[in-house]
Image (tube, rainbow, N blue to C red; front, top):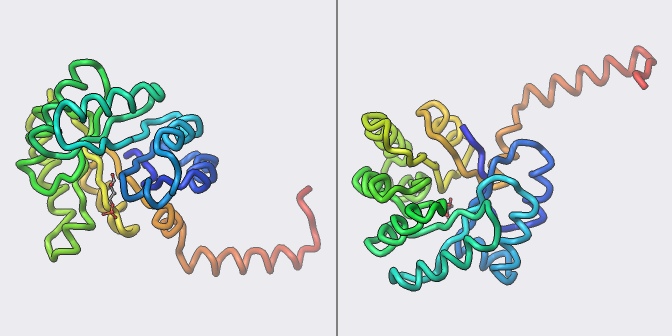
Length: 218
Ligand code: E4P
């Protein structure tokens, strides 16, 4: 399972990229607004830091403008993935980009039916939002299970399931258990994945005992 980082914070991306754990980046208009930087420059900088796929979302809602925006975004770098909303125009634009060899991420997916449409449109990735479903007392991870099950019936569908709106380590673990292709993780959730009280306690004890040996390795 690939790890994408769900942020437009270039400092966080730069730092996490050094960990060797980052396979790609996803952004969205809300994250870009939070970053407070010119969008095109920001995407270019992220693409310079991360070799893997970097999702950049169109802002238009009509087919023609989405295609124009997507082409501009795709021209920034080879690893840009054009992110499109799961609407009729968004999926029409997805088909256009797929036919042109441009990678796509179809976002704002909340049902299996929508995920089927994204696969039929040839999306590179489909992004079901698990946290936002949990927020309305629905079951986000059940949607992932259902999409993975349906996609597995059609091995010729190449769309990858990209778990989005992950809110905690359990979403990451469940994504792996269900066989999702990718999970996009906010930086703080990646940090939480490292944590276990027994790791901290064990390390503390080992360091205290090592101190008693009076030795140094270097
Ligand atoms: C990623 O592609 C999505 O835009 C993102 O995961 C949404 O997360 P949120 O529901 O926490 O805003």
